[in-house]
Length: 93
Image (tube, rainbow, N blue to C red; front, top):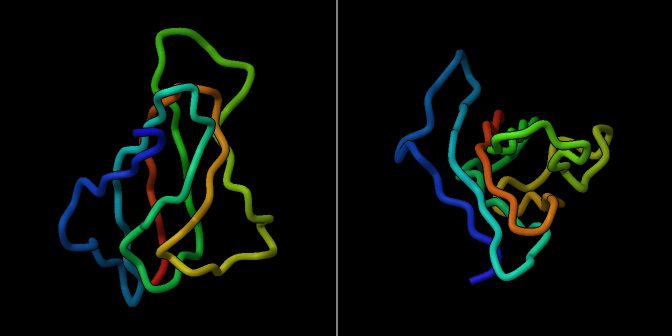
């Protein structure tokens, strides 16, 4: 297994006409990212938080430019340090 992303909530939370999903992502085997299926039809924002015990100079990033959003929620690509893991929050429809 290289990259995986797992939703923590089975049903998206709603705020008005928008949905929020949360989950975890992780790399192993020296992997440096992959696609997150947010569970949303359209993802308007994706926030990433890397787990760790020290401050990292490199943070996980979404490969799309902010102006590219909204994007297809089934495959939002992120780039991370090798073997990193953390949480995501996705916002959209």
